[in-house]
Amino acid sequence: MEEPPPESTSDDELVIEGTGAAPGVVLGTAYRYEAAAPTARRDAIAPDAVDAELERLANAVQRAEQELEADRVWAPDALVPDADAIFEAQALMLGDEDVLEAIRQRIRDANEPAGAAVQAVLSAHRERLEDSEDAHLRTGADDLLAFERRLLRALRRGAAAAHIDGHSVVVAQDLTASDLLRLRRYNLLGGVTARGGPTSHTAIVAQALGVPLLVGAGGALGAVSAGDRVVVDGDEGRLIARPDPATEEEYRTRAADAPSPTAERERAPEGPLRTADGHAVTLRANVGLEAELDPLRPAPPDGIGLLRTELFLRADGDPRSVDEERQVEAYRQAIGAAGEGGATIRLLDVGGDDRRSQGAAEAHEGHPVLGRRGLRVLLDRPDELLRPQLRALLRANREGPLRILLPMVTDGAEVRRVRRILDEESTRLTENGVPHDANVPLGAMVEVPAMALQAPAFTELVDFFSIGTNDLTQYVLAVDRANEQVAARHDALHPAVLGLILRVVEAGRMSGCPVEVCGEIAGDVQAVPVLLGLGVDTLSVAPPSLPAVRRIVRATGYDAAKDLARDVLQEDDAQAVRRRARAWVDTHLSSSDTASSTTNSSTTNTPDR
Image (cartoon, rainbow, N blue to C red; front, top):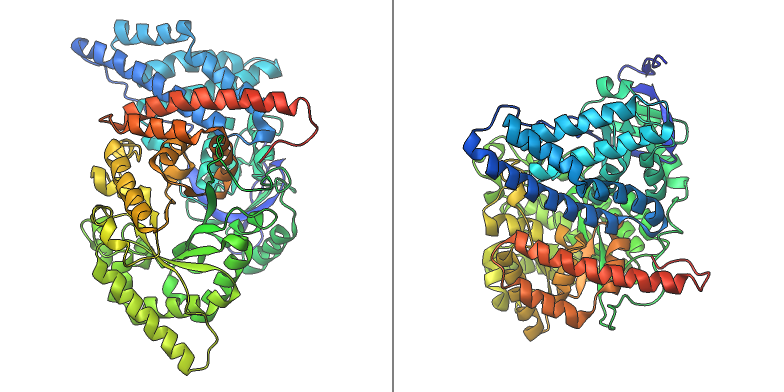
């Protein structure tokens, strides 16, 4: 059937028709996802490189199995039966010796690189299924495509899909169900595909996750560019690219009024979160956009552990344009959504790889992640950025529990200077008769190795630590996580990173200074037991990660986790740590699931979320 042409409703706004496969309305930024066409080397390898290429394939299969297990754990409880079927199909393929031997034979006999051999073998199988008139067999083609992508990604060590922009609407030729589950970790808002149908595995997963999905929108690929503002209307089956202000306001109102399709299903269980043997764990949410607040309100976690104000406040690409009054209102909204646990507000973390907030000279720094960013920028420009934000936070603190978090701290002098400015602004508000609350805890992000090494000294300067493992790992391992050539080496489970986390935890324990982890590792199901074993008892994760992390915490015995942490610290590379952690999770999660299913079979209560 011929695709309807995009309909122009204004000079720039485009309406593109498709089929709504999962309901809901979202507004976001388009991210062009090119997973359908991963590139693989096709030039022949040297005969003496064949053994190394076969070993590379074997390692990729192992990495793919690890990723598959992580995806399975990430699946929401309501999706477990469908997710198990999807992942079981891929697990069978990863263990199919006939398929693997066909790939190995092409490497040995034709001197093909592993990626080219994978594509040659699997694409031939997939094309036969795609040509079938049997709908069930065509679904099998989707499973083969997902398997092919997973294996190719593992061969490339994950670099191709390691850094999907958060809070995006993904626009792609097609998406598999496992693509969607993996991308949901990055706070995916919605999806648009040129291909696909409303009864596919992808549609089932999108419905369960509450992610609006539009399929069969072939016009989107030619009409939408990365970074475009878009609206996905899964109810009416349309995509609106570059909406004008009136259209955007109309859909913003619709999105705000609509009930969350997963709110009831993902409701947190009553009572505190505890490990299998009763150790209390605090679980908070990382928030970057206002749209992420609403899902927290029905059953908030233990507060907001990280509110990224550089995202939350950015209206037109420049945080400097957000005035003090608007900041006050934004922080009040966050406090209202955070519940009794309160909101931890990180000061503007601009600079580094965020060119939008930099001037012309700053944007050309040779090594921006080592340059003027975070607290360095704020202290260089206190009147323009730091003082207005501190005043807004002091005023909003009257509305409920609030904490201030400092980004990119390197030495104690920086913290002392911020405290001095905070006191000055509190005095100024008092003199001007502006209501505020000066009693606000001040914490520091542990991102720079220098701070982790000096953690005992910092316990006298700050009220709490929040370990940002994304940047800490980047600096400890000398790996630019935005550089695809080395991104796969960025792994927070490296023993050197874990050793620094332990150092900070021990410093906090000895001084009574709370320590929490807010980096991506806190939502990594293989890492959670390791972190608990290191003594971390507060985790802050992206909202979609909350159910999976709750589940793994409940399946973890605290004493057993301490043994695991002690063992992995003896390893000398991240892969060895992951192998141990994966085996541990497989054993403990499967036994917990068995106990859970036995309990659930004798009760009508819904599963814990």
